[in-house]
Image 1 (tube, rainbow, N blue to C red):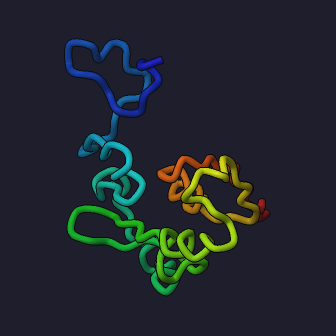
Image 2 (image 1 turned 135 degrees about the horizontal axis):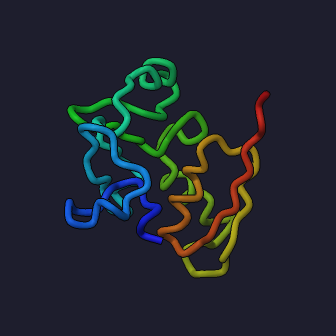
Length: 128
């Protein structure tokens, strides 16, 4: 399924690329860095940084967008919130394998649970 990837292969394999990358597009960061950073060249629009400025959701820094992992729900960061849940829900010792995230915005909580070997199913509200 490599031919369906957004980024195109090297020049000698371009015939297999269905969706050519936009001009200036750069290879995204590998996981887990891609959870927190997106190259500005791949989404050159700063409007979200203005709209979400007070929500700690996205920040523009140099040539990247940074997602601090806090947002309005986790002002000290998702990792800190998960640590605070420890006395009630012992995630650290492997007793939790799955979590249900209802009413999520961008499902970032699930990405922070992932590094603790917890799989999250995230349901965002549908706004019409």
